[in-house]
Image 1 (tube, rainbow, N blue to C red):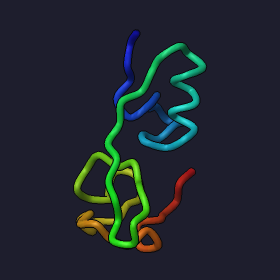
Image 2: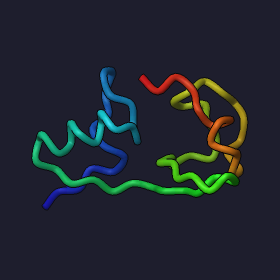
Image 3: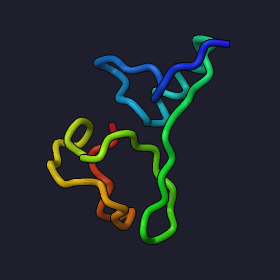
Length: 74
């Protein structure tokens, strides 16, 4: 089995989002990703230590509450 780290990623699909994982499965690949717990005991998939890559936020990712982590998830 081939594993795709963080899902299929291209201009249409951003990493670590459900649609990139679904696209990986449709193409016959498994996934490997990073899961972290937030301060309010929710789980998020995110690899980097800042939110800049996906959400254009320069803030560091240090276990914020889930409501502070949410951004444009398209």
